[in-house]
Length: 242
Image 1: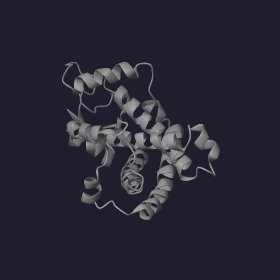
Image 2: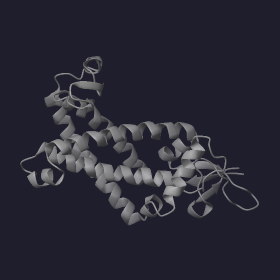
Image 3: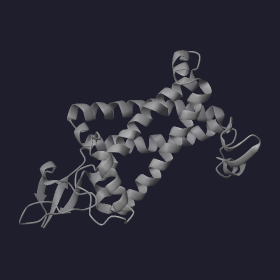
Image 4: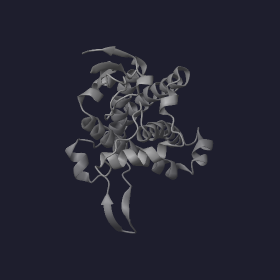
């Protein structure tokens, strides 16, 4: 028996769909800024094993000589990113949504189970909840990363005005390294997140667009059958769609 299950409230979907393009544009404008002082590489001394962005990369995507434009875009989008994140955290606190998102003592064990299942190394499906352990850890980490990006961004944007913050973060150079590392973290998160969405299928994607998904319910027990993005019956508002 198929039923509609309410999954994501409008506020969560709004924050999600605002944050995705804003963060993407911030990364893009950040590349315009980074071009002007492209110093990070993997290697030692004069030996370079990997340069993150070779000159051909900048030329292919026309990222050269756009420092002023990149800074303008980056700092405007920073406020949108900050306000959206602040509203999101406030909403999760006041709505009680944090109870689903915040990791607990079982989350790390469950995250390993989810990873093994996704890799095909575990046949038993992980516990079915609104957010599994891996999602709880990932989504909470992104919030912490967002705070880290904001603080390190302020530290390298205004190292004199926010001298105390810059020093607290280990100085200008170290704050910039952290800011760069967090950006790489966002890109990796995007890749994994999109791959998981594709793997979960249209039903899961629709839940983040329309707020509901269609699930299979056992007519005898009224329990939702296990699936990539299923919800426990206790957390769902159901309406029959036989």
